[in-house]
Image (cartoon, helix red, strand yellow):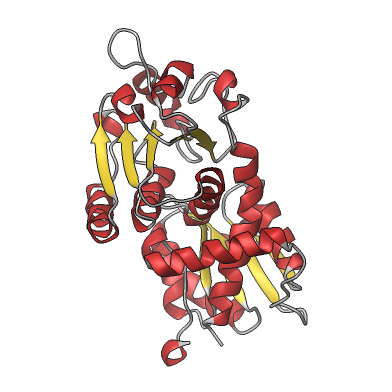
Amino acid sequence: MDGGKPRHFLRDDDLSPAEQADVLDLADAMKADRFGYRPLEGPRTVAVLFDKPSLRTRVSFAVGIAELGGQPLVIDAQGTHFGRGETVEDATRVLGRQVAAIAWRTFGQDRIEAMASVSPVPVINALTDSFHPCQVLADLQTVRAAHGRLAGLTLAFLGDSSSNMAHSYLLGGATAGMRVRIGAPERYRPDPAIMAAAAQIAARTGGAVEYHADPKAACVGADVLATDVWASMGQEDQEAERLAVLSSYGADDSYRLDEPKLALAAPGAVVLHCLPAHRGLEITAEVLDGPASVVWDEAENRLHAQKALLAWLLERTR
């Protein structure tokens, strides 16, 4: 631990390229020897807080912490004084004296940054409105297993690219040396600051970042095609507008990930979706359930990637 300060994982570029590769290597090792790593033996407790509903995050963190020898403390935050106005900083000071690490699935990125600013233990972003970095670690592990490498591959993301998944693909993919293409309407382009940050990373790693309004142009020659829901949690009031915009591009196309777009990709391309999926909206059933889909490996790899991340952070916070 440098200067007694814990390492946090709040956004994808909190890991350098070498550190990201170390975590992915450890994730592969933990997947191959699922019960062979016990850094939380004792058991030590890890708090996992939820402001938003969850299946994959809740299960993968709870199971992973237990498999590392620890005790998962799963907290629905609205059942605590978080729901009655206690400050993030005060609650963190209480938790930080009793647990080994904290993972939080919340709303604004400012909330998890406030937690990390006072936490004496590692804080992990289990999802915010801005980023979903644990998911992208799992996605990178999945792509590396399918293609044998990450650097030099092209990943195309279609859909709402102002989303946390698009932002994390930009930062995490650039860190891995990938070419990240965004296919989205102008209304749902990524945050310019995040595009700029990803471009700076890519300039150092040999990757690239691109924006395409034409969804087909984003898919041509891609090694990985990815998408996510068109209306995320908290955007229900925008659903009709989002569906209208994302369902049409020109006269005969949309931002849906379908078989014609998959046919434009490179031979052996794989398909990602972080789930839950809406078949027929952002992705067709034929693609999601087809031979190019690796979404079930991707969902499983949340377990292995998060175990590796947690162990890696704790090793640097001794």
